Figure 1: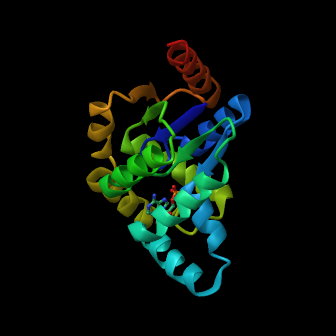
Figure 2: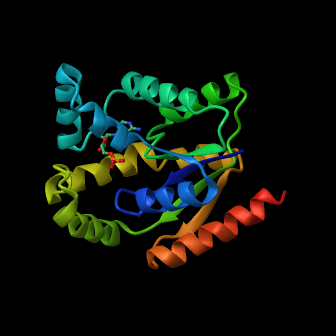
Figure 3: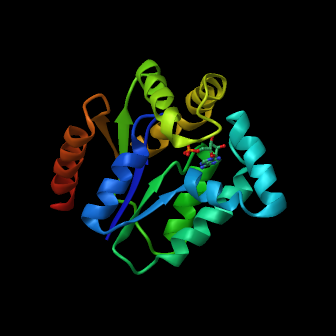
Length: 191
Ligand code: AMP
């Protein structure tokens, strides 16, 4: 079983690489942002979620933790999963750890896609032309980076202590990054 977390700032290419990895290793790709965008169709809760997303803020922990636990439970027994966009702060990381432990699941690795804010912002703006995402605009992007810096990036220390993180250069093109990820996965799945 391969249970992965793909980590990195908004625009680093997490979604793209997670989709490729999911295809190659037959993993379930669980993107918290995407799952939330699906929930938007759902009346009152949808309105609440959209307000957070449009402001570039994190939705409340209780809500996202419940949604993600349900999604992971649903796929248990399969080849594994790749989490994309979750966990996003230390409370979510701790809660995920407990959940995995309680359900007899392990974490294989945290793949940390490294990219500067400047480069990541450029990519998001490029993506905005086709994504149709209301949060892909300069003002919200700035806020999302702020949240990443203060709430999300500190989780890396938590996973470093668990010896779970590996860094990947997020600057090359999609193909090269994917090859590097494959190489990494090959190296740690041998152990
Ligand atoms: P993403 O598609 O990962 O960039 O997420 C888009 C937006 O969804 C974020 O800016 C948040 O508002 C919300 N979101 C996604 N994942 C989480 C999470 N783990 N915790 C809280 N909010 C989240």
